[in-house]
Length: 134
Image (cartoon, rainbow, N blue to C red; front, side, top):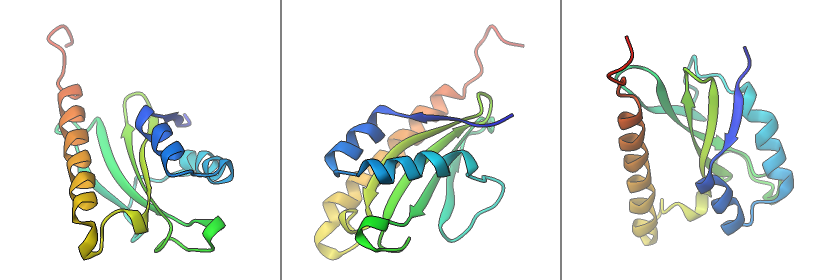
């Protein structure tokens, strides 16, 4: 069974705000269904999974071909997997230079960290089995 790709509202909004080109979005759409969550690489890290192992959050480094930058200077993408529904949910994208990895970007780094924490909380609540099941 193949994965279903979902561009969530935050991802779409950030693509517009960051002026992510249609070319880059199309490349992400082609890449995402091939994403392997069976192992971690330096360019993709699992940062969270829920207690019942339904959801996983991954942070992925992607190159920016338009800026002639590789994964190190490209984009950061946050996605989560719904293992029950077999969906890859694109949730957040940002250019690496805009993520606050330098001293002057502390607010942006804190905003990114808060976003990850909110996503963890949201998925944890969704992962609670309903009382009617079982």
